[in-house]
Every structure is written in structure tokens, then in C-alpha cells.
Amino acid sequence: MVRHVLLIKLKDGCKGRAQELCDLFLTMRGRVPQVIDVESGADYLHSERSYDVCLIVTVKDREALEAYQRDAYHCGTVKPFVASIRETAATVDFEA
Picture (cartoon, rainbow, N blue to C red):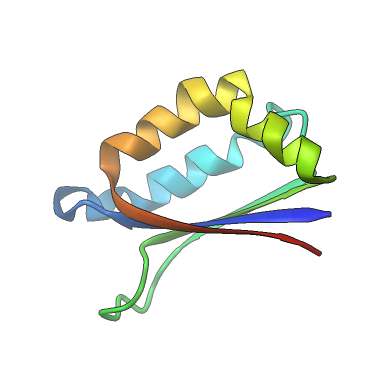
């Protein structure tokens, strides 16, 4: 299994959209065939070093991760919305 972890800091004017983004991430379940599991949550601590939203996607292997990154729904719906409200992001991809 491969886990794709994405941490997002939202633009100042978009901080109130964290839950909307989490909900959008969850719509990939059943729509993106490579996705075995998807989890998302909004930060509640709001410390100086906190990110606002976390996404964890589980796929079968590295090839499935590559296919996920090219998926039409992921690229056409999810990524553009993320790009419109994201200030910065960090990712980690690892084999579990």
C-alpha cells in the first residue's frame, strides 16, 4: 500500500473554507478508481506551525499513485479548487 499525505495552508481569506475542502476530498471515494481509502480533516489547534487541512489517500502501489495523480476527476475538479484557495502545501508519499 502507498499513502499520499497532503497538508494544506489556506490563503488568509479562505480559512473558513477548510471543511468545504475536506468534504470535496471525500468525494473522491468511489469516483477515483485508484483510491482504496481517503481521509481528510481540518485542523482545530490553529497553532503557528499548523496546516489547515490534511488529506490522506491510500492506493495499492506506486503505479496506482501515478494514475491517481492523472485521474480526470482529481485533476479536473479537486486540484483546481485546491489551487484556488491554497497558500502552500507539503506532501509525503510512503509505502505502508
